[in-house]
Length: 411
Image 1 (cartoon, one colour):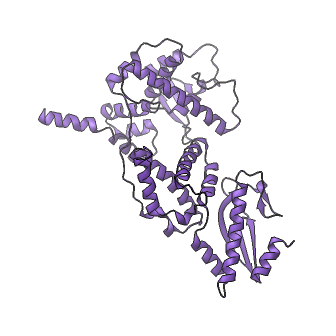
Image 2 (image 1 turned 120 degrees about the vertical axis):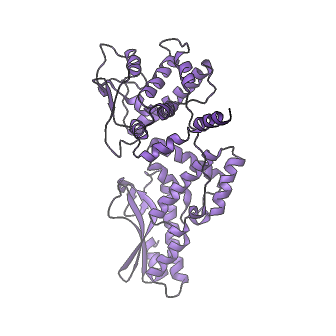
Image 3 (image 1 turned 90 degrees about the vertical axis):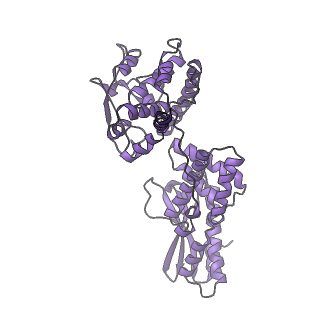
């Protein structure tokens, strides 16, 4: 039986085709897979669109080992790419390596879904979960696992966006989010040279901007939420404490509240690194603890409290989280549970709003907008990296201001 390389030589004379790993790893430690085309010692390389760990690459067989989850899809793509190169050389008269490379890059025949699945695997837990969900939705709608990047046109994007709203029941925000996730994958493929910049279908796709739905409590609702009778020591009682603590500490996110420890409390101040940005900027955020937040902590503080103990009984100190993903999964599970109990609290308090834990952040931002009247101070308290983020964040709460102005004028 002839080897693959021998077949390639016979088919294309002086040409040889093989797959190889890039000599340098990427930032995440994976290595890019390239099609190597050699003609009379002149070498050209084409990126396949896939990256794999070095341990999952078989250099002798020139294929991805079965230890890698997507080995089958990638190996299939490798064979397709090599076959395309051989076909171009055989059918194009006088084809050189440059001609072969040009033809291959112009075809955009890379499969979208295997590439998208690999991108999911490179994300952290929460980002990966959201991206995977949106890719599945798109996959189900397309109904063709062999979809190539070239098949994804601007009209198809508009059709999908329209289907999400008219048939799938998504609102404009949700539909926009779905298309944004697909755009992320295609942008990454463009960045890596898998498709040409001018072939990006999103260049001609314009999404109608929708106003974000930022649910927050009014002062009257906040009072009802804070005083509704709840049995002390129960999960619903703890849930209210967590939410109010987040509100009083300038909208701390649930992932941060869950991970706070007594070591984060010192001298009447709360100091911590936001989980959302800790992989980018290792900068501690510190604020004074309002008396209301201190009163909540008094329910949990005891003489036995140790610096390494969690502030709140959300995560167990007895459980070890072996990876960051394990921790994020547990936080996500707890967040979903807490959000369910928040809805029960609102029912008891007769608050007809879809309140989530993140609503504590929105409530603080809205209250700050009306009482502090200092966008810079609000921005710092919300831990926004840029002040224009805060301006965009709070402008969605301006309906009350315009309503009052109109009532003053014509009331």
